[in-house]
Image (cartoon, rainbow, N blue to C red; front, side, top):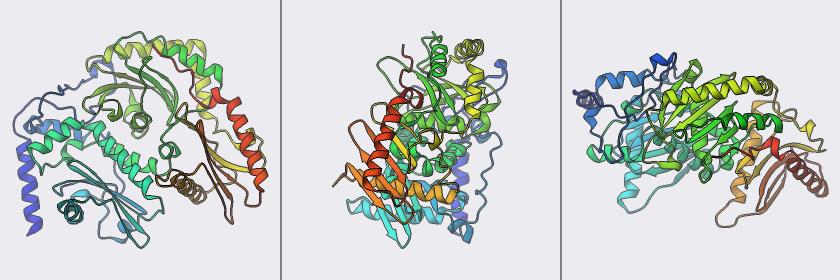
Length: 487
């Protein structure tokens, strides 16, 4: 009976949404690719306009449902009552404050209404008493909550990750939602209808949420709140910078090159920059879906740290294998201008030979510890606080299996959590286990997290980290994006 009532309620709400209206709210990326003549540019909305739910008609919903470009969620059909569903190490859930399911990393969220109802009841119990729930520990599982206005986020993990890191991942999920629906639209939608089903507006964008859930669990740049720059020779990066500086359009706010999910270079206004979390969202957008590989694309995107209340528009084009040019414009009608700028950049890259050099750099493997020649050092993460960027070598040869890489990354997470503890932060951390020596070192200009052999002496550790600092200073312009062009 309860299931029938839920289905009837859903049908009634969907019927209400499909009432006649032609205006479109660009609350999810509208992507088109192919020839210039086939481009469709979505209509934008003023920040001061209150979105009317009836503006989203059936045609709009159908088009948005196809935005995933054939993407099939491999875990979407899992039965939430099956052992395989319960066996996943980490679950992410998003629901509304009314208990409406919005997103689940595994399984069909429409079949999780009973679970979502329990989550909503637990949160409401604390809210009614004037409190706010943050986490629950139950055996090997940790339940971490993040409450953001009309949306509730929950992670259920048995990965052993620190609570602070899981909560940071939930914040990234929230920002990912805001990149599709601005904070202004989100607030006004739920002010009009508290039990609104947000899944219809997010339809087709699950690919980005799924990609983010995968990446942020093991991405050191997200853990350290920094950008992972692609290591390349200084002359090549200079050529790429010169090519981006040819963009003279006043309608391009930011221009960037992204390769293999890492930043190559960035063109920005002289007095403005992009927050690392916004750059992570852009990187996740272009690398998390094959949609953008098929041609020129034009999509609205909200960058929450830059402006959570309005949309920018992103022109996306892959200029070479795994190398993407992204132009960010505040004007929704600048597709053809951005396309013309792309032609200028690609022509200059081709003439200067940078395009071929870039392809060779992408094809080459990540740099290894052999290039450093530091005895005893097995792996490291280095964060420059000045540039808010990180660099790290390949896990090989000491951590050649996925399980070993996962285990090392979990140790890095715990060291980071201990060093950034709000009650008693540490400048250095030293731990010896049966398998390795783990070091954490934080100063005003850098952070280092490193793994060395289990039998090294403290003097050897100090010598290795000193040698690592010298190598980073020597290779600074190749491992970091330092002299990025400005206008």
